[in-house]
Length: 257
Image (cartoon, rainbow, N blue to C red; front, side, top):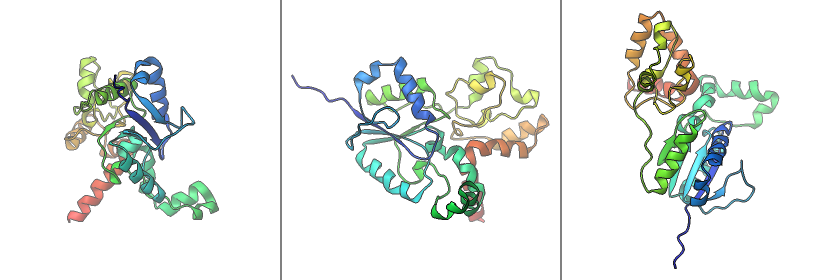
């Protein structure tokens, strides 16, 4: 009888807090059946053994150093499928806040005199360097969404990541719109899938899952203005997770003129 080999899965970390990998470990404790369906061959957070032979690579963390490029290209060459894991790999994430400042100033502020030894680059999503086959959004990722994505990959089906706004989930939960109470919320432009957890507990969405493919930012600005919230408040809110996208949009706009 022919033995069918299990898909070999590897996890890699770049610049990030590794909270998404910890969420993976947490999710596998409640879904042990997945451990029987795959072979994890590289996962620094959970095991010391490692292998360079794998089919699926999950990459957490953003691209921030010149030496990251070679490592990302090597992962891409070895893997049949690369999935960006979490906001830093998917969007650039919180790390991209430093992109608003001259990099020399950032190095000096963080490392002092030792900063001269480092050559970091502006924080960017890994898709800036290599093509990816999918992403799992969030900061950190949603554990059930991770399980759903892996399950679909094992079934040779494309992961289903929502491309509608968090407002849909708020309506399903019968949450009152936070804009009505004068709170800035990125729900109208942010990708759903988290169960609207922040608005449900009275906090405005911060956009950690990234924007939907057709975000109506001007409409959100208009709605905020109607409820006494300035565009500056919106821009500040968007910077937390979407700095890379804002700077790129600004640069692209300048390049066209």
